[in-house]
Length: 129
Image (cartoon, rainbow, N blue to C red):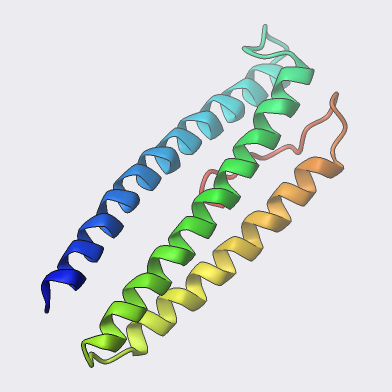
């Protein structure tokens, strides 16, 4: 592996770390939204108003789409580096395919939230997608 590839991989890992932080933030937001939903179902005081819940859910879905796109880009860059180094590319191609599916799933989830009204957000906040 030449120095240029090592530097590029180091930058990719830095991007991965930052993106993972935002993934964690998204999971925390999803937990809060799910807990808020539980409070609502139990007829208790909620953490967020319906309008705030809608905004949070929508922004969280946008964040998830962005994270998915960044991971797709990261996987593509790693594929390119491995291609230059003559490595077996099968696992990289599969990771790219998985990233594409994740982006599509997150776009569908964002679309579902945008179909909701501000008074009624989708019942289940899925932190994985």
